[in-house]
Image 1 (cartoon, one colour):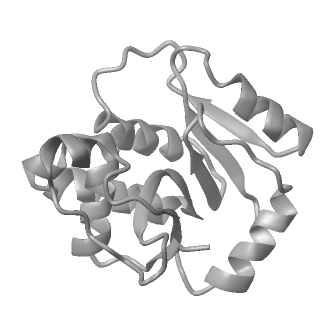
Image 2 (image 1 turned 60 degrees about the vertical axis):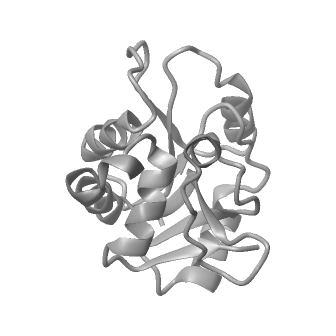
Image 3 (image 1 turned 180 degrees about the vertical axis):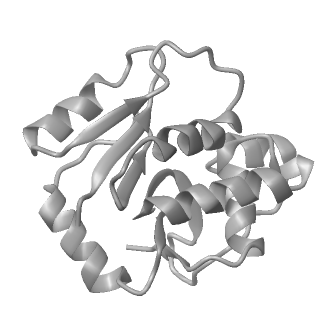
Length: 172
């Protein structure tokens, strides 16, 4: 697998992420350097534009300020192959129904995708086939209802529940 970590950062506050990637010799690519942020929903289009310029088959999309890597890319790829080889996209699970600010502010009901503690998707850590992720994000942008289009997190959650993609939630 030719996996690369891709992250969005426009304010140079990503040093701990990069340090963890470099310590583990993980290839990474920064998007949106110096860009002007207009909203969290914009992340999907930034990823589409950036991923379209890469040629890796496999990518990990990572938040840049609150994620650290502690396993090398071979171990990460092996976990993917072992547990998710039949999936095109795996999204990290999170545990709190009200953990995302957009759900707290809007009182929208979250979709639950598992009976485990980690039953809600976290759009801050996604791994999968680059081209499928591009198509998934494009379709979300085209079809998501406006109340779910306030940020990437609710939009991705809506997409998981309402679009036909081979996606799994990592509930461990």
